[in-house]
Image 1 (tube, rainbow, N blue to C red):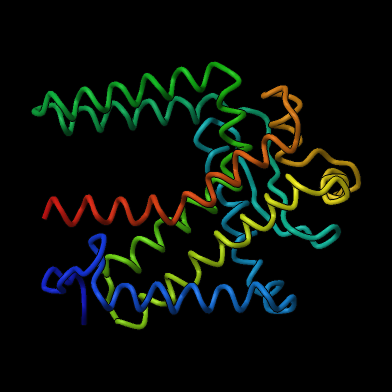
Image 2 (image 1 turned 180 degrees about the vertical axis):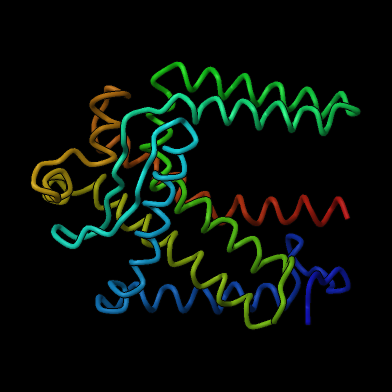
Length: 247
């Protein structure tokens, strides 16, 4: 059993030789799958599941009972949000109060909890919580990808060595999928048209963000998420380096 490997010597950016081998192997596997349409289709279901779970969890957090599901008619996925149930917002504030009580002896932690509760309240009473719910579809994909790449690089909490290239493979595959998708939206008029009418004219995530909230073009929203996707592996490596330095 292997949990943390503080004894592994770092060779570059806080990553050991085993870490770089896992990252390289995972990236090569992800790139190979991305070049084979059938394999890409099979593995896309993971991204769809994470995407819809991101919408659903954000929905519940801000008081909207939500059910994530696969869309077997148009393809992809869809999350059904019900009307807002303010009781759920009250539960979140209660959890903040309980957390604040638990850390009451630390002024720093108490201040952080209070700040988090304030940010939540600001989001909850403005339209920004709607932006967050919509954005956390693709956003959750990148968060999970970043966590997986970090675990592959650091070896943190790994039970078996074989997990590291698997984490790297999944993380890089999600990143590559997002880069290709967003780049296509930025550069191709026909792809943007297909995207906007992919579900019979129902507004898609980026379309809603662009036209309802950000008052910009679909291509600009895609460009933002393209930058985030490209940055994800570098953020993971940066976090790993910081954690190594602090050890």
